[in-house]
Image: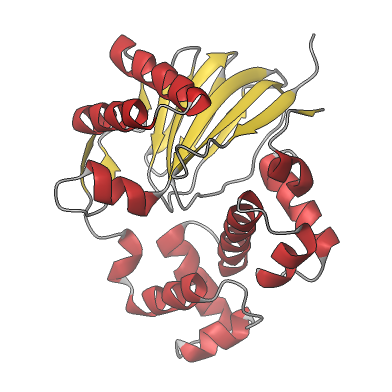
Length: 265
């Protein structure tokens, strides 16, 4: 069986999008979220797609649609290899260019199995490779017309204390403030704060902040920042800490990600 490979494609004509191509991957991913909208397709193999709506089985040709800040994981069933492609689209760009009111969207379904969506995702991946910005934008609008609608307020907004903590984490993910300090600012004990936070978001405050830091480091690396600088900017203890965390979440090292790949192994 061919060795697993991971490649990232960033075309200067489409600075608002990034393509990930993973082939024959055996890697399993922890629950995570992205700052971008994610559009994906399974090329070979099968996987289990875990998201807030439940867990769904994916087969070749199936499409996944994921909103920003949505915790999810896609992993191969049992110990098998699978291949997939993911397109990540900057949320602000998509809101400004592909929606009528510039507001956030939610997908009516996160796992889709139909020929039109499959063809659109395949064409979108090709547009990112060739630098067809107009074609890529048109394909995104097509997918959004078919599968998206204006978003309601996030669940966490119903808990004012958690919303306050989320605001702090998003504003300063690199901050060294402890969970105890966040809890104190919300007027509750650390254990109660963690319980409330996890009930609202599905993960602990520590896992949430780590994911924000990794997303920030990924953005900085894609912009050309050196690894050590990105680690410092996002609050990691050192370069090695970023490397370990990044590989655990993305199945490749941050250096390989910055170069685009392909990364073998």
